[in-house]
View (cartoon, rainbow, N blue to C red):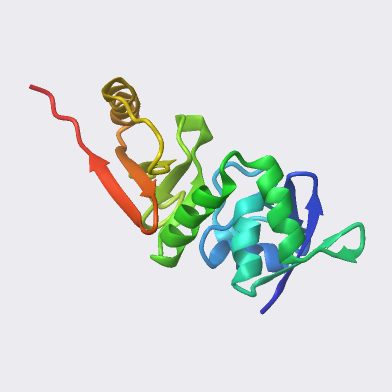
Length: 178
């Protein structure tokens, strides 16, 4: 099934309620408008996708987009993503890799990271992982690692550093009390 979405500024909206429920139920894509903790079968609201997940769905052949009634293809969506996301290329590689591994990936901005990652999905569990994306040329200091790790520990999550080079390496940090 190919879902239909409309590009609105920096979001994509799936207006059809049946499509919204089906897409959300396929992997917790997007958020139903105005419903903080939805269950797939229990909401009757349009689904709001962020641009990165919309791009992923377009590339997977699951989503067809329009802007002001006209087709909006993957190339144009990628350009929009590159305008709106700092370092979209490496962040998208991590998003796509995690999704392809069967994980649920949501924006991590409220935790001060790039992604909050679930094994089962929001509403079924709290996100066990917070992922920050860096490139091989980035400086990562001990102070930054401690700061980020303490934040993750405070919200009972595991801090993961995704290092994107030719391949993606995931480095997990754990903190213990002495």
